[in-house]
Image 1 (spheres, rainbow, N blue to C red):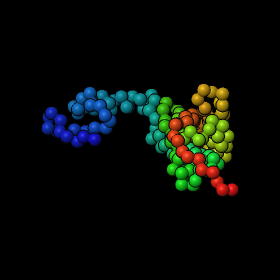
Image 2 (cartoon, rainbow, N blue to C red):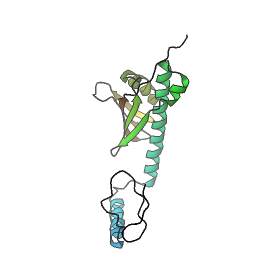
Image 3 (cartoon, helix red, strand yellow):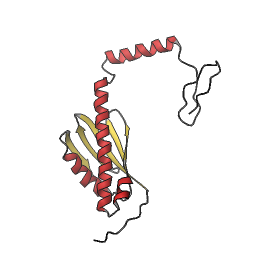
Image 4 (cartoon, one colour):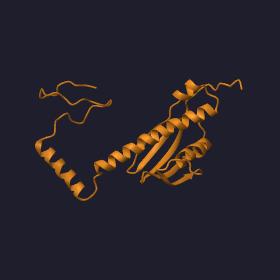
Length: 170
């Protein structure tokens, strides 16, 4: 992050990322007014997500993220990984698209079948999940649903994370 001054001696906005911005010039009053008019037009046309809807979406994403972590933990224990490694194995969701389209990234010891059995079951048990369907024959494993009335899809991606599998003494 870079907080240096720009050419006008004004402090620059914090720089996020690895490439230089196209321009460090602050927006003019005309730019700001134009942005305000655009936002108002989008709201008037019903094309701007309401704050309440945005909060609901964030809550759903938080629940899905927590479920993915629990899913990876359960599968890790089932595959005889020690508790400490199972807890750290993680799992993460990434969002894209206008509905809640999520990519569920899991370690490679979590198999495709685990996703369609355990994760599907975890979702099925949640009262806010409706219209739950799985598409096991798809190239990318996907489970579709309505979560708190918001259309969502959960796609699984195994990563090449190597974890040593410990045999239990039982």
